[in-house]
Length: 323
Image (cartoon, rainbow, N blue to C red; front, side, top):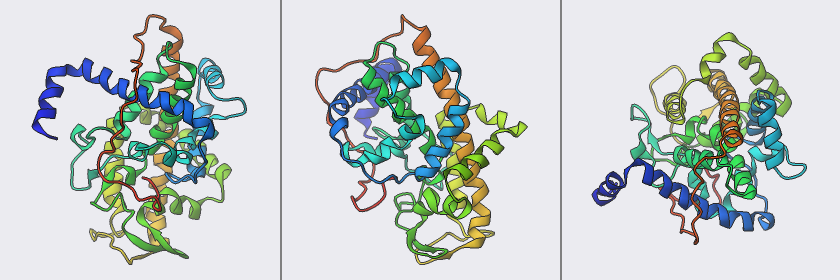
């Protein structure tokens, strides 16, 4: 980060910085509210459609009656929370710069996530900003609907190891390999969908596995922590995801992966999703309760104009899956 940017942040203080970030996001959301009805649908990439929907079904089962009612009130008629979980991927290319909101580039050599890795926007900072809008009872309904869709999606994305860990290869997108019979895939896609597709036959079967994990007594410990903590967990998982099972050898393009890699990493992917679903329920219960019970809450800033959104880090080519 440039030194002048650092000094500006220090001078502004955390309160002004949060308001400025929320203001930029509010301007973007204002434009999205207009654009969303005509936006063309795109294929979902991050975690895969079944994974997002299954984790969201787990979260929905744990919502309080109050939160469940507010979710129904915010979403469009006929739109379920599971439907909302994939909206951000389906419309990613229609929202300039939004692909960078789904991940953060943390080198796998780093010990943990740091705000320095986030630059102007990333999955951690955007999640915090969308949560602020969702919890703001004075924000327009359409803006809060957008925030709800993004909160659901980004909580789940920060739990995907290769949406956090990076080896200067776009989170594994540049590691071309073969996975079982899939001759043309990459490490990122293996984690988005390949591992889970080879382990479960569909959304319902995957959701059943997540529900079973959530019923274990030790799962209650998963409810602790912040988005930064969740990113640290994903980074630790990514360090292993980049390695040949049972060794310290890093995976390279041209590798042929199959049963051994699947057995080593399916439990990891499954637990990451279960943690995401359980934590999402806690986030929604807290934020929606805050919105309902805080008539004196400070409103999210509503800027008059639209700021130009800037993507931190690399640009993702149109033909590649956004992280």
